[in-house]
Structure formats: C-alpha cells, structure tokens
Length: 287
Image 1 (tube, helix red, strand yellow):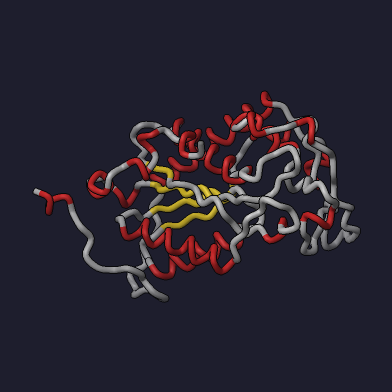
Image 2 (cartoon, one colour):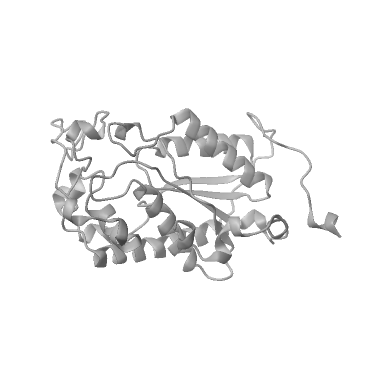
C-alpha cells in the first residue's frame, strides 16, 4: 500500500542498479525518504498512521512534480522512536540510538550511489531531534551532501481552517487533522464509531507554555487510556482530501526548490567516518 502512493517512475526501489547508475545529474536529483512509525493512534486509527501519512503525502507530491524535476521516493522507514506509546499494544519502537544509526546508514547508501540531496519527510512527532542529528552527522562526514530534515506538516496547508481553537492549542496525537488525512489516504482502516474526544490538562505555566500545551515530558497514557490526544470526531474525508492536496502542492514546490538549490560545498576532509567506501560498479563493465 505504501509504495502504491508513488508514481512508479518516481519510486527508487523500482529502478535497477544500472538504471540508477545511469541517471543524469544525480548531484541535483532529490531523494525523498518518508519516515514514520508503528504506534497506537487510538481505537479508531491503525498503528501505521505516521507512515501512511508521510509516504502518502510524498507520493502525491511527486505525482505533481514537473517532468523536468528529477526526484525519487525511497521506501519509507516504518519503525521509529515511539517510547511515549509503549503502554499500548501494537506500538513498535526503536531506541533513539538505533534510529539514528539506521538513518545514518541509509544516508550513507544514498551518498554512495552518487546522490547529493536528501530530504527527510518525517511523520512522527516523537523523533524530529533524531532526524536533525542525522542530518548534521551526514553533513560533517560529507561536505557536498545537502540533507534536509523536515516534518510532514511543516509546509503550508489548509488544515487550520477545519480545526477548532482548542484543537490547534492542545491536540497532539490521533486528533482531527490526522484522522481527516487517514480518511483520505486509507479510509478502510478508519473506524469513526470508536473515536472519542480526549485532551490533555492545560499546563498551568504561562511562561513555560503560553498556549497550555504540556511543556514537560509525557507519555500518551498520562492523559488517559484511549491513546487519543485531541478531538477526531469532526474529521471528514472531504477535509482530508483538501488537506492532502494542499500538502502535496506545497511539498512539490519544496522539492522543486531543493532541486534548484545550490549550497556551498566544504572541501576540507570529513569529520567522523565515511562508511563503505571503495569500488562502485558501472554499467560499462557489462559491455
């Protein structure tokens, strides 16, 4: 299902090694890695929400790209750092160290293939710091590598016009926005009859949290047994399609910008380690 969101000609795993080796202008080709998680999202949504949303948005964005903008999606990372949901069956988590090592290894593989622009589109709110650490480490290892860690919802979108003020302030997980997107991307996995409203208590420290969102570390179970942190009840498929379209248009524009972007290369020797260096095969050897 996840790879099915992508146009087949823009899904990197569908290419052979010789096709990848022969791609023109690999230095400016954008490789997009959706990163998600497998964790509880309340009784009404599947555990695959973060992966479905990141991969789905990326696929719809690639489908809107101009033909002359080279960009490919990778297979999504489906397990993330999800310790805050460990109280709930179905949650699968990696440690921060394991996820960081995984991201670094994937990044090294992308670099070794000749690509120099890598975009993380992260769908899980519990791991942006790991993505940022990985991007910095890869940049220190390779002075001509442009690695951008970002969040699925960071680009302009229309979700805000559907959400209540309380939802904007306090919702964090399995609420209105995520539920609407899932109704658009994978409606057969959504069970609205099981949805409930559940908000966290207001964090009563205006200096530490002006909007009342928890400023301390939390786990989902701190806020009750449902796993929901928000109000999914007003979500509709029509809203989800509008949100998806706005995200896809914005991400297509962002990928186009990254394709055109030029960033000063660093010629000094790398800090850290450059892994798996050595001979790389070329199709000419097959002649």
